[in-house]
Image (cartoon, rainbow, N blue to C red; front, side, top):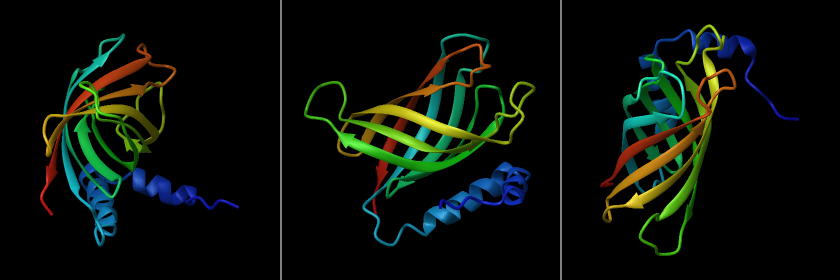
Length: 165
Protein backbone atom coordinates (compact mmCIF):
# COMPACT_ATOMS: atom_id res chain seq x y z
CA UNK A 1 0.00 0.00 0.00
CA UNK A 2 1.43 3.35 -1.04
CA UNK A 3 1.42 6.12 1.56
CA UNK A 4 0.62 9.69 0.59
CA UNK A 5 0.79 12.92 2.54
CA UNK A 6 -2.46 13.81 4.30
CA UNK A 7 -4.39 16.47 2.31
CA UNK A 8 -4.11 18.93 5.19
CA UNK A 9 -0.28 18.87 4.89
CA UNK A 10 -0.41 19.55 1.15
CA UNK A 11 -2.87 22.40 1.77
CA UNK A 12 -0.62 23.95 4.44
CA UNK A 13 2.46 23.57 2.18
CA UNK A 14 0.59 25.28 -0.68
CA UNK A 15 -0.14 28.31 1.53
CA UNK A 16 3.54 28.95 2.29
CA UNK A 17 5.42 31.70 0.47
CA UNK A 18 7.56 30.76 -2.53
CA UNK A 19 10.74 31.58 -0.59
CA UNK A 20 9.67 29.29 2.25
CA UNK A 21 8.84 26.49 -0.18
CA UNK A 22 12.22 26.85 -1.87
CA UNK A 23 13.93 26.79 1.54
CA UNK A 24 12.11 23.58 2.49
CA UNK A 25 12.99 21.95 -0.83
CA UNK A 26 16.60 23.14 -0.51
CA UNK A 27 16.86 21.68 3.00
CA UNK A 28 15.48 18.38 1.74
CA UNK A 29 18.07 18.41 -1.01
CA UNK A 30 20.85 18.99 1.54
CA UNK A 31 20.00 15.63 3.08
CA UNK A 32 21.26 13.96 -0.12
CA UNK A 33 24.67 15.68 -0.13
CA UNK A 34 26.63 13.10 1.87
CA UNK A 35 27.85 11.02 -1.10
CA UNK A 36 27.21 13.44 -3.95
CA UNK A 37 29.06 13.10 -7.22
CA UNK A 38 28.62 16.68 -8.43
CA UNK A 39 26.31 19.66 -8.26
CA UNK A 40 24.91 21.40 -11.33
CA UNK A 41 23.70 25.00 -11.25
CA UNK A 42 21.12 25.73 -13.93
CA UNK A 43 19.87 29.06 -15.22
CA UNK A 44 16.37 29.18 -16.73
CA UNK A 45 16.27 31.57 -19.68
CA UNK A 46 13.62 31.60 -22.44
CA UNK A 47 10.52 29.61 -23.34
CA UNK A 48 8.52 29.17 -26.53
CA UNK A 49 4.81 28.26 -26.46
CA UNK A 50 3.11 26.89 -29.57
CA UNK A 51 -0.02 28.98 -28.91
CA UNK A 52 -1.55 31.59 -26.65
CA UNK A 53 -0.20 34.84 -25.22
CA UNK A 54 2.34 33.64 -22.66
CA UNK A 55 5.39 35.20 -21.05
CA UNK A 56 8.39 33.82 -22.98
CA UNK A 57 11.07 35.28 -20.68
CA UNK A 58 11.20 32.83 -17.79
CA UNK A 59 14.33 33.52 -15.70
CA UNK A 60 15.20 31.38 -12.72
CA UNK A 61 17.75 29.12 -11.05
CA UNK A 62 17.96 25.45 -10.14
CA UNK A 63 20.35 23.06 -8.45
CA UNK A 64 20.68 19.38 -9.28
CA UNK A 65 22.62 17.00 -7.05
CA UNK A 66 22.41 13.18 -6.96
CA UNK A 67 19.61 13.48 -9.52
CA UNK A 68 17.44 15.52 -7.11
CA UNK A 69 16.54 18.96 -8.43
CA UNK A 70 15.08 22.09 -6.80
CA UNK A 71 14.51 25.45 -8.41
CA UNK A 72 12.45 28.58 -8.89
CA UNK A 73 11.57 30.72 -11.91
CA UNK A 74 9.23 33.43 -13.20
CA UNK A 75 6.69 31.33 -15.08
CA UNK A 76 4.75 31.75 -18.31
CA UNK A 77 1.66 33.19 -16.57
CA UNK A 78 3.84 35.74 -14.76
CA UNK A 79 3.88 34.06 -11.35
CA UNK A 80 6.78 32.70 -9.30
CA UNK A 81 7.08 28.92 -9.49
CA UNK A 82 9.03 26.71 -7.10
CA UNK A 83 9.65 23.07 -7.92
CA UNK A 84 11.35 19.92 -6.75
CA UNK A 85 11.81 16.57 -8.38
CA UNK A 86 14.04 13.75 -9.52
CA UNK A 87 15.87 13.46 -12.86
CA UNK A 88 16.71 10.28 -14.76
CA UNK A 89 19.60 10.66 -17.26
CA UNK A 90 20.61 8.49 -20.21
CA UNK A 91 23.96 9.26 -21.89
CA UNK A 92 23.97 9.08 -25.68
CA UNK A 93 26.70 7.74 -27.98
CA UNK A 94 29.08 10.48 -29.18
CA UNK A 95 27.38 12.80 -31.68
CA UNK A 96 27.44 16.56 -32.45
CA UNK A 97 23.88 17.31 -31.26
CA UNK A 98 23.09 15.84 -27.84
CA UNK A 99 25.13 14.20 -25.11
CA UNK A 100 22.24 12.95 -22.97
CA UNK A 101 18.47 12.71 -22.73
CA UNK A 102 16.68 13.16 -19.43
CA UNK A 103 13.28 12.98 -17.80
CA UNK A 104 12.40 14.95 -14.67
CA UNK A 105 9.30 14.24 -12.60
CA UNK A 106 8.18 16.26 -9.61
CA UNK A 107 5.86 18.95 -8.27
CA UNK A 108 5.63 22.65 -9.15
CA UNK A 109 3.77 25.66 -7.71
CA UNK A 110 2.61 28.93 -9.24
CA UNK A 111 0.06 27.91 -11.85
CA UNK A 112 -3.21 28.59 -10.01
CA UNK A 113 -5.62 30.54 -12.22
CA UNK A 114 -9.30 30.52 -13.11
CA UNK A 115 -8.91 27.37 -15.23
CA UNK A 116 -6.74 25.46 -12.72
CA UNK A 117 -7.70 25.71 -9.06
CA UNK A 118 -4.70 24.11 -7.34
CA UNK A 119 -1.51 25.48 -5.79
CA UNK A 120 0.53 22.39 -6.74
CA UNK A 121 0.79 20.71 -10.14
CA UNK A 122 2.57 17.61 -11.41
CA UNK A 123 5.77 18.36 -13.31
CA UNK A 124 6.96 16.20 -16.21
CA UNK A 125 9.87 17.34 -18.38
CA UNK A 126 11.75 15.60 -21.19
CA UNK A 127 15.05 17.20 -22.23
CA UNK A 128 18.24 16.88 -24.21
CA UNK A 129 21.62 18.18 -23.02
CA UNK A 130 24.34 19.53 -25.32
CA UNK A 131 27.72 19.79 -23.59
CA UNK A 132 29.69 22.93 -24.46
CA UNK A 133 32.75 21.63 -22.59
CA UNK A 134 33.44 19.45 -19.55
CA UNK A 135 31.66 21.88 -17.17
CA UNK A 136 29.07 23.78 -19.25
CA UNK A 137 25.98 22.66 -21.15
CA UNK A 138 22.79 23.86 -22.80
CA UNK A 139 19.56 22.00 -22.06
CA UNK A 140 16.48 22.07 -24.30
CA UNK A 141 13.36 20.88 -22.49
CA UNK A 142 9.84 20.13 -23.66
CA UNK A 143 6.93 20.28 -21.26
CA UNK A 144 3.33 19.27 -21.94
CA UNK A 145 0.78 21.86 -20.84
CA UNK A 146 -2.57 21.64 -19.05
CA UNK A 147 -5.48 20.58 -21.26
CA UNK A 148 -7.17 23.97 -20.73
CA UNK A 149 -4.11 25.84 -22.01
CA UNK A 150 -4.21 27.48 -25.45
CA UNK A 151 -0.77 25.93 -26.10
CA UNK A 152 -0.09 22.20 -26.11
CA UNK A 153 3.60 22.32 -25.25
CA UNK A 154 6.44 24.65 -24.27
CA UNK A 155 10.10 24.49 -25.29
CA UNK A 156 12.51 25.87 -22.70
CA UNK A 157 16.23 26.67 -22.86
CA UNK A 158 18.54 26.44 -19.85
CA UNK A 159 22.26 26.97 -19.32
CA UNK A 160 24.06 24.65 -16.88
CA UNK A 161 27.43 24.70 -15.16
CA UNK A 162 28.92 21.93 -13.01
CA UNK A 163 30.15 23.30 -9.72
CA UNK A 164 33.38 22.11 -8.13
CA UNK A 165 32.87 19.86 -5.09
